[in-house]
Image 1 (tube, rainbow, N blue to C red):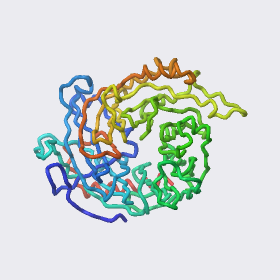
Image 2 (spheres, rainbow, N blue to C red):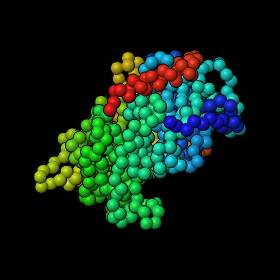
Image 3 (cartoon, one colour):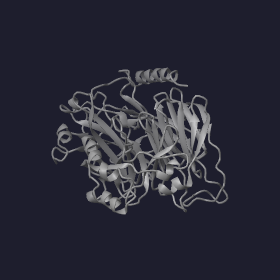
Image 4 (cartoon, rainbow, N blue to C red):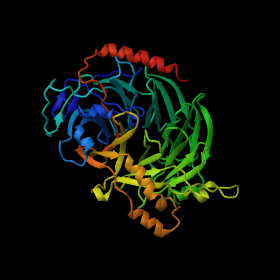
Length: 512
């Protein structure tokens, strides 16, 4: 059982007696909102950031419908209001994750936020998906000048203490399960009904073969820990990458046992920017929506693998820079991989194989020998938008069209280490047109320096910046979701909690 604790919530105006929290959906990128409803009311986004200052900061972004239809217009103004500012941990926050929403009307307005830190704790919070009700309470004043709008339905649930080292990754495969990874080389599965640890997957300790560049392990110790993991959409397979290992591990979630180990070839590592002094370890890993491929992010490049664990494509951003976060663009027919960089860019790459970048491998020529580059569709931010600070994390929130048959817009929320959270409105049709226009340039395998130069010069700038909010904290992680609950709902918290436990129990029976 998690350790229960109660405490006041701090915000810019001081300390409030209410309790408020945040959350990140297991896959918040799949949260959509009907654009027809946006014609009559604002679109509210709940944003939660973690920071080096141990603070969980939550705020809402209210986007008027006219700004969605005409993002380039300066009026009406996009408004931001703080919902909570909580000193959640005793050291830096590493990751945050939000549970999927429930389908029942009694508890669909409740979500659970989990935050992991270097203090070995996982803190749990209940968040409301209901936007602030108009005219219910006046906005609270604050010393910083920011509007404060607190929600009494947000509350703290407790802490999980089953890890013995820094928590590195959190993920909700479904409402009833929370998966967490840490530097103690374990991946734990926790049941949300009673917060019991159901199983623990133990990764082996890597062999001590030299100390990689940038390693922070203590003298005499071996770098260890799970950097990241990704669960296949079927919920039967998982891949993970760890510190000090030049491989990706495959796990059978039906048995909880190792399914295989895929070692990274030396030449393949060189093609994705892992040179002589690189660690060669994967930093991030993610599956696509269909589960037909997965991407592994290294320090300065990305390798795309097919379902047979064979490398088929690579990404090396130009100019060379570090990669902080990767994610597949949801609710889009084409496969688009999005990544954020050290120099303030969010890049969009097509991972679709075509005639110009198909692999040509044979028994005598491994796949990595002819590993082509992905097509660069465009970018958000960068020097052209006067953004040069590193983007630590981002979320993509699709907006459905009026007929709900397709997704034609998306909101991109990105957090930088300088404390700024920026929101862009992206027209997804730009990605399709960019692929057609750039196919002849970027589809060629990049062997010619002249072609590479022309490719860099013709990067298309996409999206429209609609809001920048300064949090005042050095952001390490971020999550966001569209608030789709009813603003006038006043459901009983105890009754909703009982319903959530019941549905969490039902969801447990759907998985092994």
